[in-house]
Length: 316
Image: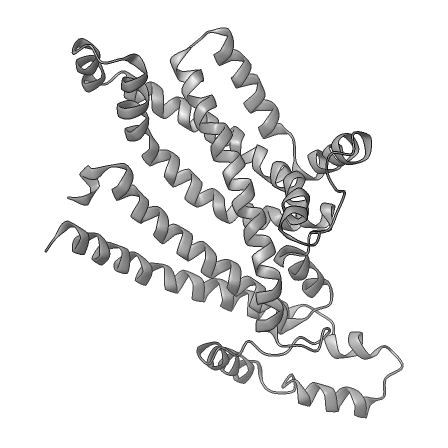
């Protein structure tokens, strides 16, 4: 079998192992939200609703059926691309998720771009100037980034850059591509700086390990330029552990987007999930969790494929 075919088989096996994890996550969420005390129908209609109205609406949404029956109907709906109806918004859960998902994906990718874009050069500079002033300054900056939570950094950025300097909008997503990108800057920075701090330390550690390898000394002995040695040889081999962290942190960015979207009024999946949880909107919570879980599975599969690109040895 060709190397490309072997890589495809490995990715397919990886996908098969992640599907049970996705099933467990959705099942646990389904059970937990149904076991929480309270009736979403009474909450939706109000305390003054009659028993007949409550019973009729509960029957309309299938909430009067046994829990096992509801669980079976939910998974059967998933295989038919039907995630049910939102109790509060009276719309298809699939439509609501598809409307909000692009905003959260754009925010996550923006944060990832900022995190990786800052971390790789900072980590390389820190490793190549070990124990120098640049290394110490970057180390202090990473520590500050790790210690500063999103719920504190976001309002601070709003006060300085939105209200004080007027360089960026305060909240919302804007209209049009240009306005959308302006609104995306502050939330992406808020979400991406923490990732940059983590990746910077990872890049530094991985680069220091690679710079001490025999092939680096051989490359230098051949007279190769230091820039070529660092970026073409050492950095490429140092990317594998960094890719692992990026893949794992993608899920953390999706989870952290809930706080960031709330701070900046970003109309993404995180705010929708938070609203659905507070309103005990069963179907909507499950649909949002399913979207996040599928995204996390796909990202991990792409990370596995990226290993082979970053390190040709893994294709064997």
